[in-house]
Image 1 (cartoon, rainbow, N blue to C red):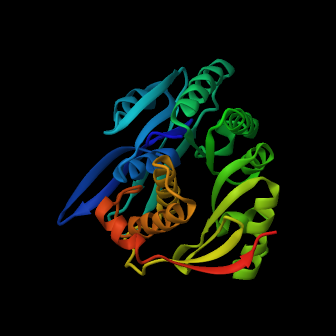
Image 2 (image 1 turned 60 degrees about the vertical axis):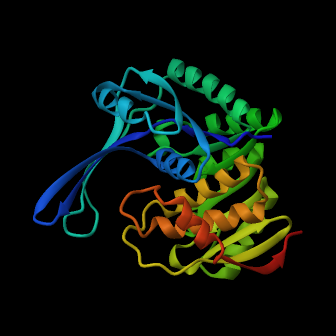
Length: 310
């Protein structure tokens, strides 16, 4: 049983630099970023604690490392010899424009061994683990995720994966408690032929058969789909005006993890995840949202049964 703590595996966080326009003056925002970081922010916003397992190095890593010391987060950091990833985005015109980006160099064998060991220990200590993906698949090999999922699950840890492609295939083979994935990723992987509900329901059932106990599929403003407790549901989200579409899926994953960390049922986890994802699009900060707003929106998430899972 988890005590309200989640271990987030974020092997390659990035340094993010974003230029905003505030009134007549430009503003520079420098933050840690990447899927695991955005999930971590939302989990702590929802009242759970996080142990963040990550690696950072090089000139960028020296700037990034102190920024990873986030409130409510226990940082377990492996210092690397080579560079962490980064990106620079310009949002002064109202939309996000990429200026330059580097995902970071692959982890060495010794760095990976150290990160693996501390991640395994902290995951077992927390009882709930999120395996988040790197900015680019080359940074860390899929088999690392497969071994982590297998070792964590074999020792009683619930594993939540937010992955796609070969990294997803690796953890499905090991078996996971919850999978969060977008409909775009399912189509790109060839698991779904298109974005229709019929095609995506078939994909959910296949993912369940392949090793995911529960599956949550985000699909932008069309509402989500979820498979849990042997049934597929349509998840109707509250309609909100978007300010930033990026990060909604990561907030959805975080909402699920926060509820499960406190021993809540999967239905509540799905509702909370959907509400957190919907709220995130109203904010410019990725992986952010006020807990009271998430709670109010959770009450407005509707689940409609669509199909029984075999």
